[in-house]
Length: 520
Image (cartoon, rainbow, N blue to C red; front, side, top):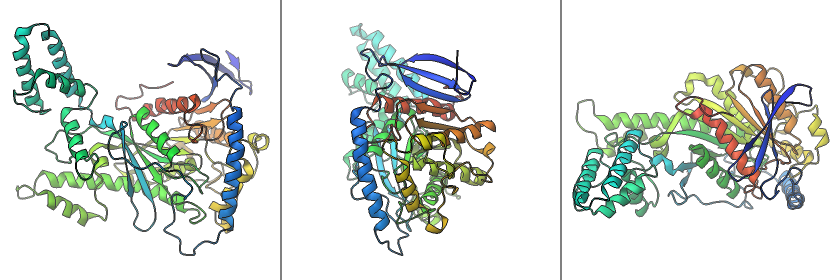
């Protein structure tokens, strides 16, 4: 038992991770500090981060960022630029790939005809997994196959039993012409979580002109696995980065695999072409678009069942009716695999400000967003600021990558000139009179870095949430810098991986169908 700086008691214990590197958690009233004790060879010990390479890259990064911000502030803007931009020419982007080449399929969708608002959907291959009953039948088949493999006389009956199993569950072909080797290969492939039917469907779609995964929405087929949905908002100070940048694509893929969720990365409009509240409105539009997709999917399911007079409905009629209902077509990935009742918001840097705004609006909307329910949010080193400086804002004003002067310039580019204030509701979450009351906010995980000048205000916001009994823990990473888990140079560091794992542990408390079985 140790004492925290404010005199309160805290517990100190060590957790061993799979790479042999030890991490210490220091808990104090919902606050968790993570430090590195070093690995087997003493690498990455406390005090060795930020490294010399990170410090040098930070100098180069700040020089480029300052140059770009100044260019944006001096460039003339089109008076009629409501359509906006969601990426910059100098941005390194990752192309969308709708097939499961690395376990995650992606696609880009333009969701607003009046603006450049778009999303990138990240779909994990685990959505093809068989149901629990299917998995049990496959397990029995594997046990029976292994038991009979030593008896040559039973090989023929084993094949027939497997074929019968396939016929009963519609996993694959029911003919007896399949060899035992091919049958074993089918069972082996199904053991990874995907049914043979789903895998054959995916392979069929990938060989067609589309070249990507396209699920069937037919109710007569076996129901697909439903996954939670995570809305992600990238960082970049409201003026840079994008949903499809190489760094954001890598980070979203990591979250998809660790959390086993569908990630929707929102490409909101950037400043100064579109100032406040454009980015915040785009975040809310993305949430409403998700709700609209759910309603369109439900309409499609009802049309698929039967006509009112009992006659079968044609697929062409389904598409025609869906077009009549709304301007958007139903998104098949979300319709087949998305579970909007388990929706999580995740914001990175300035994206955390957007996520917090969207969470507030979701609370205000209440049942109007049904069936979409925001069950939790994650704020990663939020882009908070205020007119009265905190201790970290004074001490770390010239910190790594994003110093305070450049961030203030970014706020000047984002906020309208007549509204500019460091205590603007978009910038300072602690100003009085904000609605709705904090006690109605969803559970909120806040991630902060030791060498980030914005850390104290993020911690203070989390403390205010805990005062009204909102589950709002704070994870502080020692020797870390702003965007240590999402910046392109730092994405592959042990801290970035550990941060994503910690987020997954906490998020699973609220997206698990079996209750709060995951916790610290």
